[in-house]
Image (cartoon, rainbow, N blue to C red; front, side):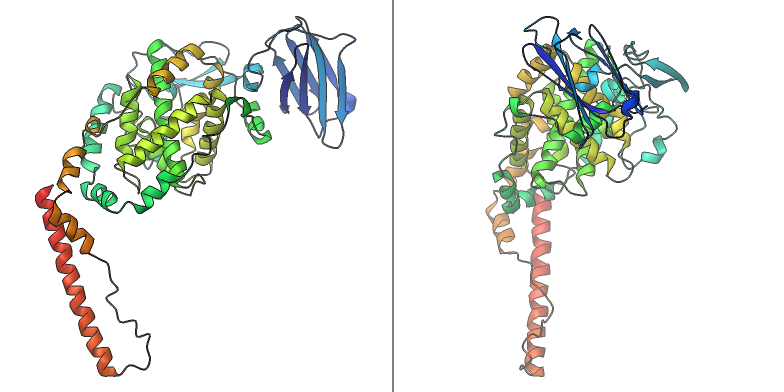
Length: 451
């Protein structure tokens, strides 16, 4: 049976259920209501909802069908007049729990998603990976197929060793010359910083799911997450790092995205490529800053500061907007390269469902902490302060300023010039190239001395 697209709305006295079923057979329509249970059956569609409150099937109930768009509208009176049904936009939470496959020691286990995950509380397991470091995915046999995505194998590298490996790798990958070049030639970066964040003027009450997003949400499994406090913290802090990577990609692509967006997001988030996690929000943001100064095209501390501002604005818009961004990330990975769709199975699908059900007090506490976090250059451990002091060297600045890339070939645009003039110009051009090469070597030598 097919789960139809649906959405729920309410006023003080009534709940309205809209169901889109364009290919239904009206002769087989069957509606059943019992307290907080609503069942819609009309082949080939079937929908069972566990509502957040009781409704009444009485003389005040209304129903209609728009044959042009194939949409049913059902309106029922609330049992308790004036009762507010919470989070009606989070439609996944009202679906009947489904059976999912969980893997433990290579053995498949079928688990009803309303029950406790058998690995949810296994926080002593060294082979942690995926959402909230729960594990339980059929991942062991396909690790080698995604070597372009993951920098470690979670079955070979214990969780306690991953941070050390990551830090060592980041230190080795940091390119001081690239960082200096982006400081001295920052015109493009300044243009990116000037961009207005599209969610800056959005109000939380204005956030609505699109029909496409509702279609996506209805197909997610309704999972109950029984996480330990440690797992909850890992979950929250890793999500902040992931959203930082998303904000970085949005700003540096003029909020349009590119074919490289999947690489950018997956590479900047150590939660993805290292299966690492964090003990506090600041360490998550520090990691995001560092990786933003090591891997992508634009490597600027002031750009990172602006991206962090974007993240803080995003978090203030509430869970619905965060889910909207996660669905966008899901789409980026789904249509990306090198099999990054696997990140949806390991992380994104669970994060979307979790954000519909998470403890709001704990989540808001994490947001309050992150809103007060400030990152300094000295926090990153990349010697940025010393590097920036070095480029104040007058001779070095002058050398970079005077060094210009010129075309060393003779364009020969003027056809009236004689062969001798062309020969003379060619000799001059060759001489200029020699000077440029000499200056380039001198600048490189000066950099090596200072750095």
